[in-house]
Length: 386
Image (cartoon, rainbow, N blue to C red):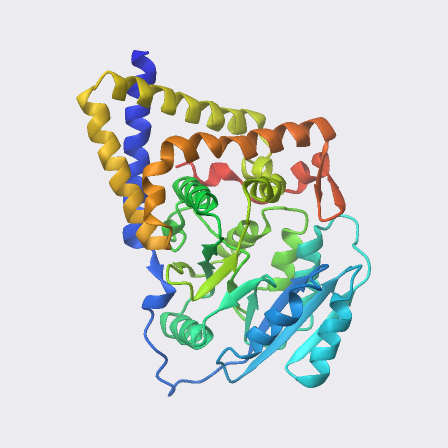
């Protein structure tokens, strides 16, 4: 019991320090200055992969078309859709010449579907900058102007934005906040811009890349069979010497309507959970057991009213509060960690077990061999364990 108690105090203290550091050092896209309008406007190519998105693609593209940026092309990749996604995009393309449809009929061996779709879209891009983003992302009116002016002024080559996560369920919001905390504690995204650190971070919701600084076609080819493709792409950018930057979006300038239920959230995390630990059973199991040990030790310390446990718990709650403010998470979630922290162990444990038993990862109707995924992975969690 004493070991559990001491372990929980040390880990919560480390978590708190990391959360404070992340919250203090990550900038928010909403804090970028308003565009002055007297700077050059390089051509921007927005590449959007879409697979069976007939219910949402029209509305999503119509919203994108209203975003304020004068020189932009929208390349929508219809990735083997079995519904009317392609015809909807083609119809919009006839109405607005900024839209271009790229049809992907087959998936080559050795590629993840989304990565291949991005690769095909980028091959048609003419922009000085390329923005990779998902079809369900909502952008504020002046976001692109702000961001483009910012990256030009700051000489940034690779910029990613962690979006504001939206859902109707209050408890799912709290679980999303816990997921964000776990992600940031492990990957430390504020260190991605440091040249002397290995840390890197990418979020598929919004990845902006200077085309002449990074051979994007080659970079995508290098991560072609990595399900953590966004972070793997960030790793490639950093290895190529790119100046990287991570922003948050607490006010919702970049947002996504995420999972509506816990079940949907668990299913959505299945693809990435085991891959996040680089398919290493020891790391995945070790993290989950460590979380259980921390919670057990914390319970022992609080029940016994040990002063160090009480103090570190107060510090941890304040650190969670700081992160919640930084990313726009609901503040009530700060106090729900006794529920959300153990609950968020489940998706990783279930996904790991399922993948090991099946020997494959199934995502959007496509099977990917576990053996081949292991051999081709680029993202490595141990890069961040410094």
